[in-house]
Length: 228
Image (cartoon, helix red, strand yellow):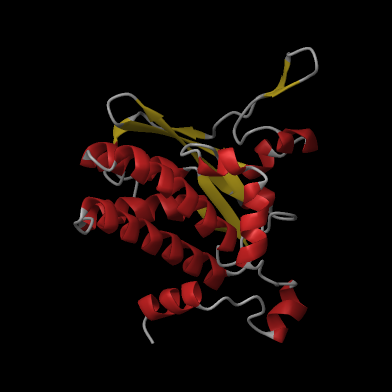
């Protein structure tokens, strides 16, 4: 069975427990699609907004991530399917707004493959052509920066997240932050990712500083210049 078959079978057949060993060793029980959709309905507007950021700190093989992506891509398709460049840019904006962490390497690989397959299918269904290899490479590149293997409880100092900001001229700006810096105060978790934390007086009491900053670059060149 090849990788595509694994992705397709995972999408068609819901699995919550992959093995007793994984449950025993890692406490892994995947959230069912019904529960995922019910929870996302509680934040329906945000889950359908293209650029709203979501982080799943124990993402498994991506059940929440793919459901969020599907909602975002429906918005992209309803608004931008008539112009290829706008569709592509907004699709990248949707992909770059979703973040995940998991302990297990195979979960991360499968989550990325599932999300990429959903994006490729959406592209083909709406633009009536397959995305070219360069665009697929850009999508995968963004996903590999956002969906990371790590320990979101005890290893946050080893996790580096990328903030993607869409600017005018179809350009994206990329800044990198350590997860430990973003997580210095538990109250920060109640604010959007990468946002400054303000007290009740509206004063900045914490503002994450990027460890690396990149110049804005045209979306079709995101993998160029040594970034890939």
